[in-house]
Image (spheres, rainbow, N blue to C red):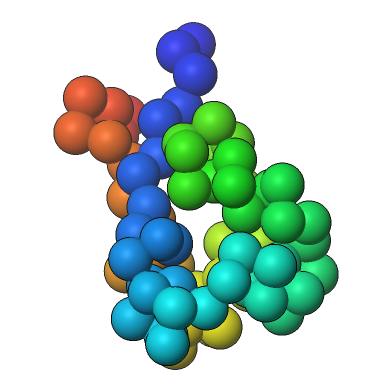
Length: 75
């Protein structure tokens, strides 16, 4: 199985929220700043729990924040 590739809009959403820092988002979600950095760089796929927490911080759905990359098919 190929490694999943997930695109996200975290960086864009942070800047739409008065340029929220990575640390502030991490604090609100209960994770580390390094986790937020890895997510933004698409080096880490979040757990479902973390994805939901991030979406809630921005008042969005998980689908609004995270998407499967175009080259991933749903089987």
